[in-house]
Amino acid sequence: MTKKVVLLLSGGLDSTTTLAMAQVQGFDVYAMSFNYGQRHSHELLAAVKIAKKANVKEHRIFTIDLGGFGGSALTEDAIAVPKDRNAEAMSHGIPVTYVPARNTVFLSFALAWAEVLKAYDIFIGVNALDYSGYPDCREAFIRSFEQTANLATAYGVEGSQRITIHTPLIALTKAQIIEKGLALGVDYSITTSCYDPDASGAACGHCDACSLRLKGFSDTGKTDPARYRV
Amino acid sequence: MTKKVVLLLSGGLDSTTTLAMAQVQGFDVYAMSFNYGQRHSHELLAAVKIAKKANVKEHRIFTIDLGGFGGSALTEDAIAVPKDRNAEAMSHGIPVTYVPARNTVFLSFALAWAEVLKAYDIFIGVNALDYSGYPDCREAFIRSFEQTANLATAYGVEGSQRITIHTPLIALTKAQIIEKGLALGVDYSITTSCYDPDASGAACGHCDACSLRLKGFSDTGKTDPARYRV
Image (cartoon, rainbow over all chains, first blue to last red; front, side, top):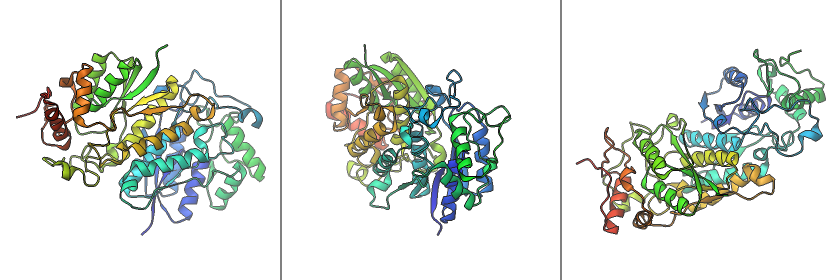
């Protein structure tokens, strides 16, 4: 029997690479995406394309109102997305693009679905190098959530197999992630990373996410096939 | 300055008592309820009445699709709510009324709101005695979530005050909870605990929640002012 896994799919480069890595291990992927009040829906459209192309077992989009809380440049028009910051600037403090408790909320939903599916594995494409300012991308957070997950659910009380949170990208550079994905045949042209795309979905090329992505491709000597506005 | 707290308010006896306990400590209460696909909306209507009567700072209702996962008698019509079970029967295993990962999801949302409000305290009316079969009502789960919450958010990285999850009812019997609530002037007539009320909202008197509630009132020698169908 193929093992079921729940995978958080944002439509970005990292989660798409994570999906390819889970599938090459032979897992049956149940992908989840969230309409969480983000300012643009291009990443959800990308997630739908990616899930279809990868032929996942099931793809669900959950609508949750994190935007209603405010407090992030990714959900509030009034907070500007920073542009053209260098690695030094990006490494200080928590960026305004941080969405409060986002990964905790996403992983909680993944846990609920996993428990119903009787899956024992959750995949999330967090990365501790590129997003050093996001507290919920750190290994310590993930391991703590994993422990909580096992106490929260039937996994913890029935002496059954524990649930594991997989973070295959956590210690990789963006270039290493791209190399892995390309080796697995990932089509990065349909992924979207930009925090501030235009109405057509073209990436800005200047926000932190674009800067990291472009540097990653540049480090591998490959060209980013995503569409940028000029 | 009054301290802000986020409080999970279901509209039941326990969370309403917890609300009274938080307010008597002088906290400003920001109450959250969830429309999570439960079979009936009477508890949400009760939560609205309770929040209004208690004059909370703000009350928000979040719609989240936990029902879409299935797997619980509280969200699926096809799974019957057990009736007339004694304490012995209730204490074995995880009841079918358990909603997968519910408290993890609820606490994650509470954490997101707390972070935006800059609140350092979350109140949840879980009880480990009455609901011994629910893994996410146990002290070990709550303490683990608290640790995860501090790693997940700005609380964990800015050297600021930690966030605390308060569970004032966790070790109380139902009778003790009712005594505390009555002493604080809680109006239990507007609370609803029943898993299976009729269309008018009248409680069944036979599900686990009704059985525990009725026994609690009986132990205190008081009459439950809630409306039961006859």
